[in-house]
Length: 419
Length: 154
Ligand SMILES: Cc1ncc(COP(=O)(O)O)c(C=O)c1O
Image 1 (cartoon, helix red, strand yellow):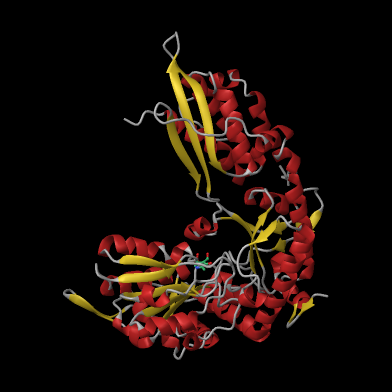
Image 2: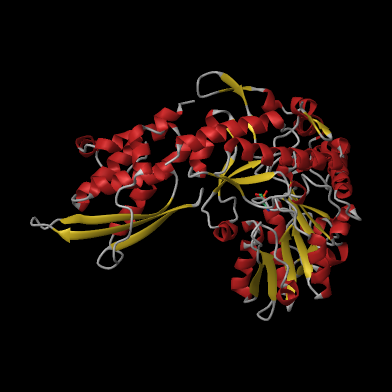
């Protein structure tokens, strides 16, 4: 029963310590966590936790500096992770993988470095109404300084990008920022089509792949991206590490973001010479254990196979959409595309008249973790005409039983708060 | 883990289902303030009209509540609107401090003796919120917004 197309969920669940612990339930009875908030942050398998503690126990030293063998070992672990992460997203070279703190920092790097040198009062940046604040606010901060315009690709009724006016919107635009998969609606956006149109109009494309890379086989070249950002903690990896991938020539043409150690070849009283990629954008000691952990996370997903991960999520999403509608009934609204193949396993819901905060409180009593709120996408919330949604998001360790329990608890929440 | 009944007392659900004093007041003469809970996107609008009574004290003569939010923020706002009508601004401030100390929030410049004199009445029903720390902000949103509305801006 736990084998949903492509993955053996029972075996996977056994790898996640947090999913195998008894937690105190509301009635005092121990219960298992039903974790449905992976779009916010995923849980971590034993393999990732072990790789990080093994690094600290056996290989800890600063990287890129020491000549002693331990420092070489630490550097090799870090660079090995970089290579595996590069091949995980189809990057032509591991020098194009820049480690950042998270996706947010990766996009701020692009805004500051590329935007800071390429955008002026006559320019425009085009983003979408479904962007996360991390791909909105860096542009707003920079626009206040540089005076460029920010344009928005609107949405259709069912939460897809409305590309009818794309060519007109692209006129005079130098960068397009687009989320590959919405963290609220689950929509998988046609990045390739947008990238082709953007390139024809002379613009470069920054892809926010924070939700894509953990869930869908990703190839940066096939996507047509120029720059692409994602974050480790949504990808079975630790917090504190993210990635910016960029085409090497583009990254080479951009000035450094943060200054300090590691990003220089030489420093004199009258100036400095920048190091080559990727170090040019990695000032200071990197989060070494976290990078090692992210490498282990990518190995874990590669072993499962990203095609199998995606197949599991499409089939579980289809099951969830069907079951929730059946069990909760007419007063359940699931925002976003109706077709499971057109979306990821992110289900943003309106549950009758119940407020998301109250819904998640009732669910918490059953050990079910979901997110209630605006999901860092307030412009999108305004387009949807809601203040908040209740969001359940699925991943490799979720199965039909989790969805069934969610459905029952939603009915209880709905009935409790029926006006 | 505390149960749902601790949080969602009957009085709270009643105020949530039939909120008192919903609406708007004309500004001016009424004052208006908006409050946001950045965590969940809830927003509340408090309209408050005051007049000076025979003793020379400023009194809440009318109050109206707008905005959207969860049951706790809506019920707290509704109970607040019922509780403060006709009270002087000093009494409102004392009531606010009592409510906040019930929520275990340290309030500067109040002495405990004053607090224990203030009867919370129906507002006592919000005492369960303290067991759900993430919801304390929901319960205090309306009160902070009211305080902002009655604070002179110049
Ligand atoms: C689509 C999207 N972009 C960006 C981010 C930001 O990720 P982080 O907070 O790790 O920087 C998130 C996660 O919250 C996201 O869902």
